[in-house]
Image 1: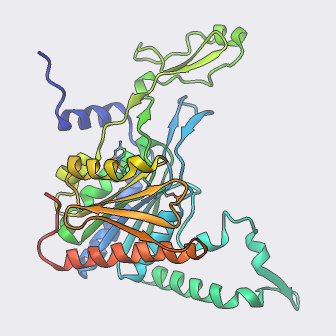
Image 2 (image 1 turned 60 degrees about the vertical axis):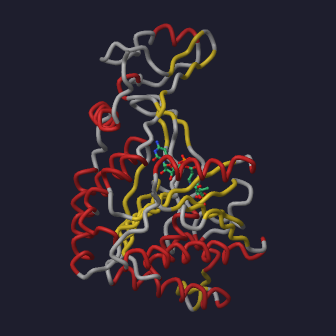
Image 3 (image 1 turned 60 degrees about the horizontal axis):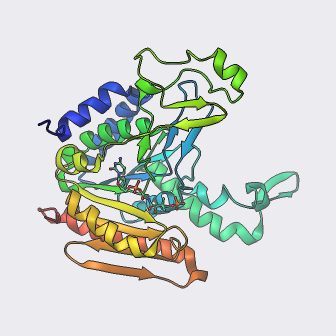
Length: 341
Ligand code: PMT
């Protein structure tokens, strides 16, 4: 009888067969310097992941499958972690929301709407002065103290490579390392050796002429046209949360998120995740209500809902993140991490 592969075998198979992003080496250098600098002065470091990962269908990518996330949760959380005294590594989907600048980007209003002309110079409009000054001061302080490192990913494979390398670099921080995994991570993907090189043709005439648009592995392409239909055969992404908990960051505090659309599934799925991976906290949210309510599921405290009135949604987010920041801080200050066993 054949045994299922071990977690270690699954990990090495994935990372051998799906090459690292070109920027990995320079990002690792930046992250190492950043972590060492903060470790030296005993500062807590949080890795915040944010935004959705993509699954490219072609090596020279024209088409891809995306995961929902604007990056609001991650970018907002990063600000509150900085406020709570953390150094923040912000691993985000390229062009998704960033801490501080999120207040003025991806908006229905252009950032230019916050400006006006005065005596031939550009100045901030009076009604936005107070708020912008507050944001600017926080941003300047984070920059001055070198407390924010911004890294990016686009694809699922880029994300997983960066997560693994940064997590390993954070090991010496012990319980002063916090992982706050708000990114929406693809569950299915096209492995590198089943990806076609060129754009998949939609017209039957041309799809026949690029019929040998295969790959060097000789394996059947995961995405191909059959007649006039596009057929995509995705493979599951290994659940690397297990490796993060057991191998990459055994002493760190780990907070994962669970996004669902069916309310009856949310708490059950969060509990299942907590039992399966034995990490510290799962924060569950529903797509439609994620700005107003979340549920914290942990072994210590069971199920705890945090809700705020809908018209105070900015406050709601701040409440959630500063709670996690303080809880994680208390965890790092005690010698033992409060791991859910
Ligand atoms: O950015 P916003 O628009 O504000 O939206 C925020 C959000 C709704 C995206 C966020 O709050 C959220 O819920 N993020 C998690 C989305 C999700 O359900 O992820 P998941 O089910 O794919 O993964 C659950 C956890 O397992 C994640 O923490 C992930 O890091 C981890 N995982 C997932 C897949 C995988 N192969 N390995 C993993 O370890």
